[in-house]
Length: 433
Figure (cartoon, rainbow, N blue to C red):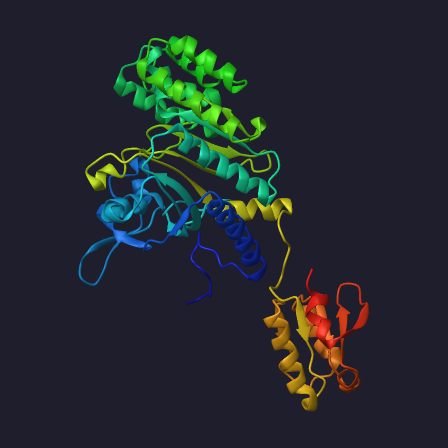
């Protein structure tokens, strides 16, 4: 290679970044398990036909290749389609409703940008086998709980239903085929703005009156009750749209009962979500601190699993984009700012006391204190202190001949330079918060 480098759109994560990413993963996993979700892992490679025909326009982003046997394979695009395959393949072993979470890398051949990568890590949570609006609400409640525990400020989850935009299009006088085009145009709202979407609708052949009505309705704002009432007034004659509004009303009521703060969600009729497999509720979580797009998203997809299982299995879920959460948290200074996993660094006071130092390190580790051990007994304490500081350990421990004879250990705080002597038996307690 002329230049040693990683592939564009795929990142190396050095220790400081990995420690923050692991913190995010730990918090989200803890929240999922608090809600009774169980772990699942699927291969990163699937047969290409498993992914094909499920993603709409995004299918062009799939990484495809042939293996040595000539089989057509693909890298995992997301965690959702593999879940559909798993449910169809192992349905007899699963107890529905089934709550699952999964974490791992996915791959998309798109143009890299801030917050968008060709290799990215997703943490998904889904409820399989329930059509209840309580399942939809629990997913939204879970994401709100996780983001709050991660320390995200000012986030709000936008809620909509696939049939709301369709109903708006039909109420504006468009047929079913044209309604699909409206959906694709509205999906570009954040990128193009109202005027850009209007121009897109006109190019599609939507007349000016219908375009104005569509834009007015999808931009309806206010409390959930206000937005729902406005939409009911205009969509009263559309049975599917009214059912969608009833569904959103039930989800809002459940969120209130679950104690999700009302400022954490609102109904946004302009929210579309691009993936074609969504059938009901769709949602995205946004924050003013990340203007490039949403933090995460998801929705209900009641027909996708049926493409594998041969029968409808209602499902709702979400995907936390770990890369995006990491980038935003790093920018906002959220989460632990760690450079190492180690708390303590045990120095070695010469060859004669190397065994004592190793025993002390083992005692600390057994007591739950993450500990580095010096590997060079010939180095002076000054150099060992510098190494401990360079490794970002909080404390350096010294067990010299005088300390050994007194049954003590010197603990030096590398942040402020203070030091103290503690009894050998109390060292673990002294280093444990």
